[in-house]
Each structure stands twice: as C-alpha cells, then as structure tokens.
Image 1 (cartoon, rainbow, N blue to C red):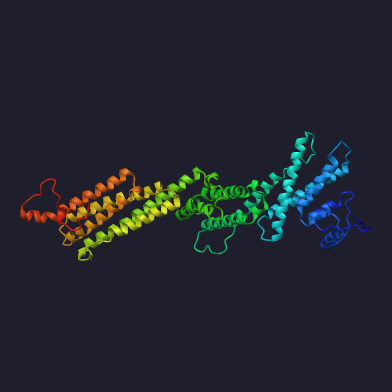
Image 2: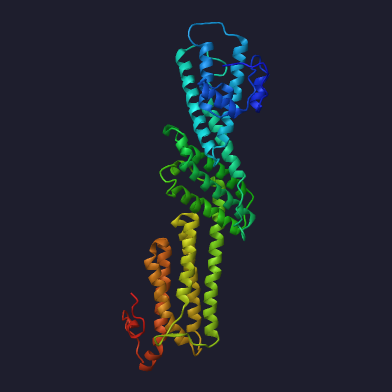
Length: 454
C-alpha cells in the first residue's frame, strides 16, 4: 500500500492504542474514503480498517495469518516487537469482540451482521486453537484463545444487565412495586427470548444451540431476581403474583409457539429453590383457605338471617328454592381453579376443596337448629334445602378428583345424614297424625319433592 509522510490521527480508542506501538503509523484519511479507495485499488484492508468497519471475522483472519507467519513452519527467529504487536492487537480485538456481543439485541441491521461476523471470528480462532493442540508444540501465550468462554461470559453479563435494567412501559397502574418488578422482568425475558429465536439464532451455527444457551442464562437471571424478592417476605397479593409467574406465566412463555422446540424447558430446573418456594406455597394455601371459609360462612349467615327473619325462601316453578348451593359451589370452584393455576398442581387444589367438608358440617348444624325450632318458615326452608343437598352431592360425585377419598366419603356421609334427618322431620307430622311409624328399611323420600336423590 502507498505511504504518506503525514502521520495519521487516530479515529477511535483502539486506533489511539495502536498508534503508540512502534511502526504503526498509518495514512490519515476519513474512514469511508479510505475504505472506498482500498476497495477500488483492489488492496486488502488492514487489521485496523477491518476493526473500524467491525469486520471481525476478517480481522481475526489477519491475526491468525500473522501468528502463522511468526510461529508456523520451521523454527525461526521471532522479533519481540512483532510478537508484542500481535499480542496487543489480540487484546484490542478481544475488546471489540466483547462489544459486538454486548449488542446482540440491537435492532440495527448492521449490528446483526457484526454479530454474525463475531461468531465466525470465534469459530476461526477456535480452529486455530485445535491446530495448535494437534502440533504438540508450545503455543503462544495467548493460546488457547478462549473466545467461546469470553462469549458465554459476555452473554451472561448482557442478560444480567437486561434483566436488572428491565423497566415498565407504563401499564403497571394499580400494581404494587413488587408486582411491577416481576411484570417488567417477565416481559423483558419474553421479548428477548423471542428475538433470540427470530434473529439472533441465524447468526450462529446450529451446533452452538444458542437458544438453549440464552434459555439457561435468562432462567438463571430470572430465578436470581425472584429469589431476591422472595427472601424478604411478601404480602398475600404479591405472594400470589410471584407464584403465578413461577407456575403459570413463565411455563406458558416457554411453551409459546415461538419458543416451543427451541428451548428445552425440562432441563432448566425449578425457578425458585425449594427453601423459598415451600413457605410461599404454604402462605398462599393458608390465605386461600381462610378467604374461602369466610366467603362460605357469609353465604350461610345470609341463609340464617333469612330464616330468623321469618321470610320464606324464594319459589322456583312453584317450589321453595335456595341459591345457597349455587353460590357456595361457584365460590369453591373459583378458588380451586385459581389454586390449580397459581400452584400448577391439582393435588394442592384438593387442600382448598377440602374446605367444603367444614362448610357442610356448619350447614348440618344450621339445619338441625331449624328442625329444633317452631318457626313458621322452617318447613319451607327445609324443603328448599333438599334440592341444595342434592346439588352438593352431585358436585362431590362429579368432581371426585378434587377430594381425597376420606374427605369425599365424609362429605357424602354428612349429606346423607342431613337428608335423612330432614326427611324425618318433614314427614313426622303426617306420621303422627296417622299414628304409624315407618318400618325399618322403608324409604319415605318418595313422598317428598326432589326424589331424584340417588
């Protein structure tokens, strides 16, 4: 290449670094003009020009060629200056490589090409490591290059930075600071992993398995962030949100059509360590059970207030009826579904469904009080509750998977006991007037409404 008498002014930090090395003076030209002239003259761009244009694959190729010139073939004298220059250039190149990797999520098309060039540079340098290993000779101090290790370290730092720097786009109104933080990190994870599959993946050879690498890095960073949140104790609402992300939202992201087949979620492990997860789960279950108990108790108290106030139950198709079973079962089913969603385990939902057996005991006690009173509306209320008892029984039978066997049997036994007591009470005036007692084993329920009980 032609030379000039005027020393070149460095145009970048690495250029200033190279300028201080002996013999590194270059002509001073604007970058774009210099590159165009090089291309037009058919001359090969220099190492510095490749770096300025971020053509990292070509730059590392020149470094390897210089290395071969110094160390390849028969033994030859190697000048200390040339060796120092090559080591210094590799140091500068390493910085440029790391910078390119740190921009892996840039939306600029040029940065995507730079990333592709960086990955190819790493591949070339790794091949040079293998060549040195095959010779059995003592390699230069910078071998092995370790660029894949640098790559993984740079990506880990990048993921950590993006997870910790995640910010809300402004739709977190009404959320606590904890809930907003979890939402921000979860959204960042989903967006970034989507870009890995759609864009970043194409910059890597298939054997690198870059999607699973990023999957592990984001899983680790998300786990670390949630663990920090969980360590300080959470109010009930924050606890529920965190568990929902652990067991529902996060698995849904991994099962999304974009990531499905790209990230092996089965190998990622739990998002929270067991010593943090177990107390949160216990807190959620305890809170959910207590809220459900209070809600069911309110339904029963409303029924008691109706009876004690002397008001008759509403009539449906000319028959006394009560919304108690519908209200209770809707509330119970909602709590069961929410528990299964938040904890991701139907067996845990059974612990919530078991609250029904406590409610049925309270209902039995209430109806016993009704049967022991002389209130004028007692008969109508008991007739209405025959259908209520049937509805509860149907639910327990059809949703048997929600109840452990002993709990299911206890519910059915309580319902049968209350039904028989109610039938006896309702029929007792008629039997007394006839001065007869039903023979043992005779079912008198056929004389009452709602004989669909089986």
